[in-house]
Length: 481
View 1 (cartoon, helix red, strand yellow):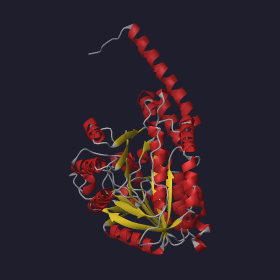
View 2: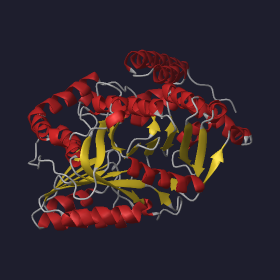
View 3: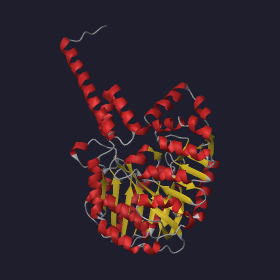
View 4: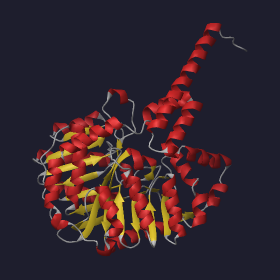
């Protein structure tokens, strides 16, 4: 049966279509002018003009990547902390590391971090949830003065309750406890969870990427950092948030493969600087913290702490990956749950393989983000011919973020190999320049390669048509994922 609409209805619909197109074109111009990458600008502009009804609300929430006002506001907050930073810098010269023949090779990393490598640090790999949370809880129990904790995701489940109770117990014993959580990552965290902590004396605050009314729908800037810092001396950093799935208790993913790092020594103070910046920008108050660096009691690792984020003057995170790939002589191994890199990263990986470098990417076989998973397959046909090898982890979900360059430089942190980590998230990476520790990281990687299957370009060819078209389509939106 044909339903005839009134002339008035047709007129209203016509006006609505025109308005949507006009708004879409206006936003497309905004995307072209303000996006940090040409790929991102093209993707948004195409969507906003061709599909304005769907793209406009998405752009309001996830678009507009380059907020000059936000960057300036964040930087002004950092300027307020300069007296503290200068005090720390004045106390650290005796811990400045000499990398010997490697100094010039990695000087760019020090300039990106705006801090030098320091010696007299210890670094311990923490493999998977049981070992990681056992170490973190032990560190919390040892706190005498204060605990700084920061997470992208906290869940009100068994491990989340245990974490909360640990913080409450220390707060009631007189230890100053500060907890910062990302408001988007913790969207489902019950208000009662936060209130229980506050009632016990824990200072709890949410991190928001934007505070302006004009950007109230904007969800792009997220604080993806995960760390617990005890008394300014010991810190835990890496891929694990607070949730039962990180202990392998999610029936969908099963075994959860992740890595954290326990750090003591002067590097802990650098991590404390990054936490203070996030805390002050969110709370507008400077807590009293210990700013006298001290040497680790056992090891003597050279370490650099690299905080990255959308308020950086440079694209620090992507430059870090590019630098490591370009400086590799023998091997560059990277583990990441998400592989949606931009063109410069792909080219650098291909060039490294053509130089004869052993280039390996360790990715998950299981997917928690379907579009990102599909997009990762689209890179195989252009990287494999150059010698880049891709391995997909089989036993469960692989979530850790680590990197190994030759037999000397390694890194563990929170940054993924994707556009979000490169340009939109606040991330944190601990870089270790040490042959012995690099050997431990290499052993960790090798065990995971042994539990993985190597992926090939033909794997995509042999997939169903819907999968192949999905992979190629998802690749088009890579700058937005």
